[in-house]
Length: 100
Image (tube, rainbow, N blue to C red):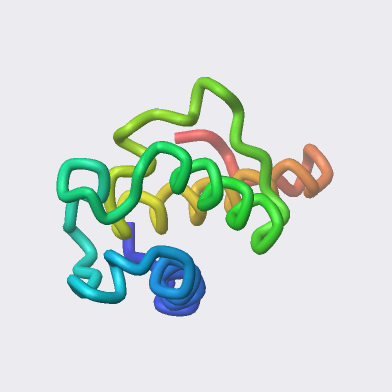
């Protein structure tokens, strides 16, 4: 899936503003945040709150996995997936894309 640069920049901006270590060390798309100590588990909760407010999405408890929040690339993919599914759910059933 090709990532939306606007979504990535909004998330990147939040992370750089919110987390001093990310500002100090830089933020590459594949950096493992928890492993590298850029963001801790409470920081992930702040990030989830940001995503929910910024993109009008809801993250379920089952979606709060390390795979979805381990890096900038993972968070962008998660946010895009949630926004895409939200858009699809709002369409009338006869206008929804067919499942593959």
